[in-house]
Length: 379
Image 1 (cartoon, rainbow, N blue to C red):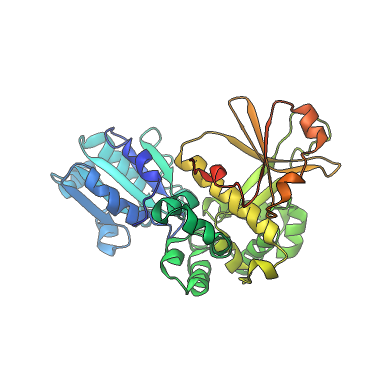
Image 2: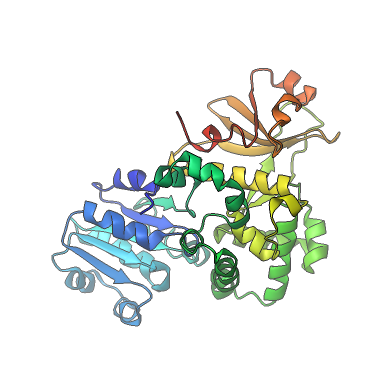
């Protein structure tokens, strides 16, 4: 079994009274992780499954008296697919406030946030964790660095969803199912999107622009949506763990872009499924963009699982000088250029404008020869 790095962060909160909320995209392994860690919590353990109609029915109008009766002598309550339960935020709040000694662990997809089911009822009563598809470092621990390096191009094409990893030789069909059945389900359910075909066109437009500065005007033209709707839909796609945004870094220079953004996919395989493109890297024109998306999305997993607080950006000026990716934390700036060409490190130079204005910044060029430490692998 692949060991998930988020496990240690969750278990650190096992002894306090707050609820543990595990969020993440559909099919990212939340239920599997809950089963694995359940043995580490005090028993007896009670499981509720939000997919079951009788579970949803018994929690329709929760009261502390009713919940006390349902929980009985159990010390740990695990609620899987909790977003399916209409009053789940209120249920968990009542358990925490009225039934001492019961630890609540709940998992859910993005519908939690889209439907605002937990944030207000559980203010100050929860720890939230994001579980993404499997990461590079987890696979290195599973079968070794050498094997994972051999599969690098494969990962850039098909990504890291658990079912993709488990269905060797059937990756394209699995990704087609994930993209069609799960990609928009929460958005369509909770936001009542009137024109889902235009949402799909927007996602396709974003897929073609990974690694590039995006224009809402251009996205509007390609999707048939107005600018305001484009921005709203992108926010929903972020909450659904499909894409995420990076803003532009701006501190000292009038020429620095201040309101621009890049948009990346959380998983390369989903991105390629959206545009139905699984050709080998040698036959593609977007290999550099795939490499950048792979590194930036995998880096996000490292930051989340190691609980590293950092601001993330890209840098660009009106003169078209740019740096792919920046992190700012503890007053320090870390700048990274991402190049698929393994020999690029000797040729690439950071823009002098950036070097002169941020002389103490850390700078590194990331290629397939040296990317491991950037993704959490240390000697």
